[in-house]
Image 1: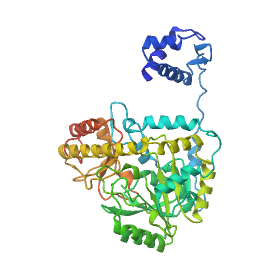
Image 2: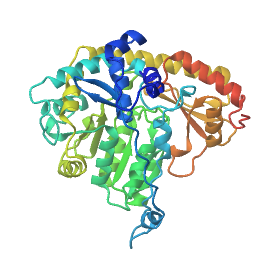
Image 3: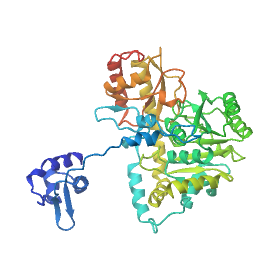
Image 4: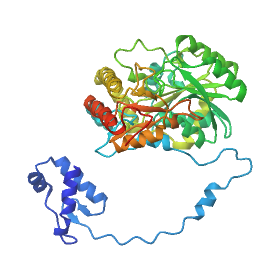
Length: 476
């Protein structure tokens, strides 16, 4: 589609303003593409203001745009945005660099090992398209949904979470990031401390700081968060919220050990605090993983856990449907925050999600993803051991989409990431995953966002050629 749009754009000078372009049928025959491709290319030109589409008449060259007025002086905003009010303890500026490093699409020539989403080749595109088509034909599909979400979808999420969680305890959200934002705004006032795993997902740190809260790190090891340090952090800070990823923790891939699960809940309950369980990767277990532990929410009897779940990671970045689950009065607080922020998740998207998870293709997709992610993990880990022994792998995860590598001998992770990009590989430096000084330099490498395992091998070879064997001393 992009090539056709470029070709048509370059030929517009052949037509006078108001002149008619060839018909869609003529363009299909000339360029040997499908009618859908022609339609999308013309729609792109129309969106750019280059052509005008007149139903029943054709497509015509648009009049040139008038020049834009000169930009005004916006320097006054520096004062307005930086001025602090009395009692304001946390700056209002937000550092989103860690999130942008994972969301930014690299140029076509760059292999992206920084993505947090499945590549299109392993997304359930056909199943999603079919689900969306069926959803659009449902009676009332475009009506306003219940603010809490469709009852059937809430019931599905409740059954997935398990334990005593019921449909009435679930709110449908616009993905996991939105659910985390709602949870932190509901549970912690501005200026309050929030305990987080260290290292942790940069998007969580950005949410906390954007909410005016102060993230406090609690170290994790190969078995998840360390309970003795969690208890000490609660006592030292008086925090009332702890956010964790007990399953395939991002970025380390650790699973919270069985002996620590009840201890974490006991410590939080004694502190009068909530545990926000970000269960982002439950659908991303590898096919060589042991049986997955239940959710913390399923083992919680006192309403300590606020559970976050999303369909996005296992499907597509554009299927932003997730859930918040909690028990007790906190549900009303969560509902109020979500309604004020976004009213509700669009009903067609909820209907499509419901169609997708109820289709026979859904379990087949999860099984295929489990096998593909395990294969990619092994390919990338093997290539690193052969080509870049200076990047050590403390833990080989059995789920998720990333490897958390340590730079042996020290070094600068940001300089490494910059040199890697010059070599044609996008990686995520480790510094944004820590809210305090990191204990060592790390680099996160994702294996989900590339087109196939061959790209992983090529990426490591590029790193070896561009950086040399020792990651601590990039020579590019």
